[in-house]
Image 1: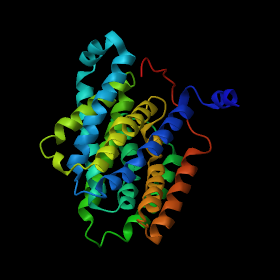
Image 2: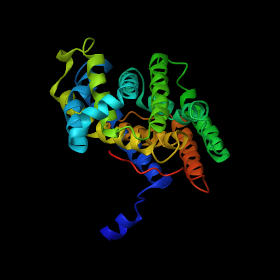
Image 3: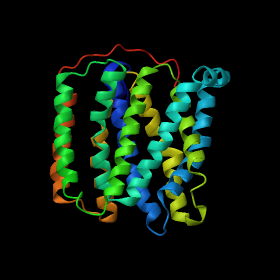
Image 4: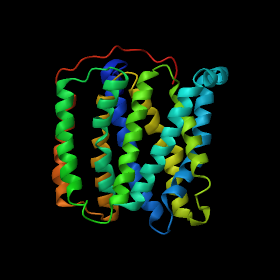
Length: 305
């Protein structure tokens, strides 16, 4: 059975890219739940959470990078220094924005806004890479927008606008990074993850307040930084080697649904009725966008992970 399952896993092409995108978004959906765990018995803020995540993630990701690249790690850093710095800084901004947004507003709100990623990714890819986006994908994006409007519509009149705006910044940065990763397909993905972790740690070191970190918060940020975050970012950055950014970002609603469900079940943070309706629309939109015929992108085997 294990052999049959392994044989069904795509080894290259668009299907592999979509599988990696799905896996990455499913893994990163744990962040919202873990942030709530970190906040449960402390007044920890987004800056401090981001710093701890970067602090725990840095040694793990650099160890993986050294192991995968070996003696080539120095030359690769020199060769790709400019795109690495750009994607690292953007990644740090996106990570910090997302973690901060969840501390400012309802988790379901944040992840619903994150689901708007396909819009930004498709537009950016169209202008920056001149990459074709199929009519089916655009229709799926349009349906996703309807779902997002339904989810967020009931909360905009409240006092959570700041969190919503920070979440919007997070997804805009993420979409930009998707396009960069697609543009530089040979860019070592392990270096992307490592540089992002270090940039996150450095960017948040000054505003972070370590005194707010309780034992529970320590364990939650360790899980985010030492395990789930690196896996998710590696999957997402690698996915863009095989599939267009617009299609990769279509999986952001996976995080929307999974994260909302997790926080609801664990902390009884019950999403509004509109969230359920909008979530159903979003899931249906993603299913529509990723089924049926689609243009295969030119597969380019990765030289290193």
